Length: 355
Ligand SMILES: Nc1ncnc2c1ncn2[C@@H]1O[C@H](COP(=O)(O)OP(=O)(O)OP(=O)(O)O)[C@@H](O)[C@H]1O
Ligand SMILES: [Mg+2]
Image (cartoon, rainbow, N blue to C red):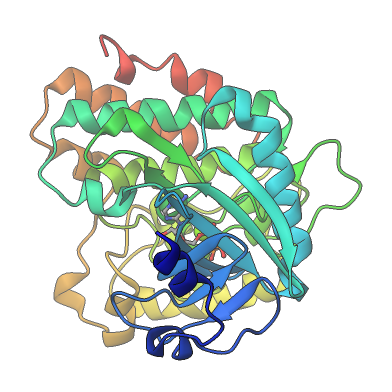
């Protein structure tokens, strides 16, 4: 017993301990990166691997001293203010259980870190599998309920898209969670940014730099509901101008009350793309360009006319279900935000009957 104590207390570090890398501060240690070793230790967490990265920082798999796993979002100094807003929203929403639970948030070496519960699967990976229509409907209903909760709490998410949904438990549709509140707007707001929403999911109001409100999320929801079923984006546009064209091709020329909707620049660029399209033999209406690459490659044979009803009619579902899905998509994909379905409208849709 005595001998053991002595061994433990001796000053001479063991050869193993001598290899421990340099300590950067009293809380951070950088270790060689390998499967077994963490990338870095921050506070009481070892960062094991990167889970994802976006415009606001990196997200790591983190393990605490109890070997419990978490996700840690680390934002650099210049993005920290957005991640602080995100942390405040996560805290506010905790009672509703619509997002991963926030464990803690702290500043660390000019970075801002948010520790939250770890999700096991991305929505994109889940829907790529051969899952049933009922699972897809369950997903959509949960997503609409979560967005409804945000809107009831006067929060515009402002970045509704496939990548911002994760499943807490692998292959469990009902465990879907909303993430990424770094662009979110708490109402009433004094400032409405003009750079928001990811391109494929960008609403006409934001695209054409008009004033906007919660309904921008409902447009994105329509795009997401399309992608959950068809497993490809509705508007895969490489540029805002192409997005404008793709929206017009699918939904017709934009009309927005009495206002001139397009700005001078979007209207100019729209006409130039529109001419390209006409030269391929397509009219502006009733054509959905399958991918942005099609226009690039001017592969005419691939660019056949599609409408939402064409696409939906090919689904292997009952007529009733197809019809209610089409009505749902059309409700969400209204140019005019006043006519566009709200989350409450969505939740009353026949598409979710008997779920
Ligand atoms: N709780 C979590 N569990 C597991 N993975 C996560 C978690 N939170 C985030 N991720 C992963 O990290 C990625 C980036 O996270 P997040 O969307 O919050 O960052 P961002 O910088 O705001 O991204 P964006 O580019 O969308 O603005 C996610 O798409 C997801 O793959
Ligand atoms: Mg994101």
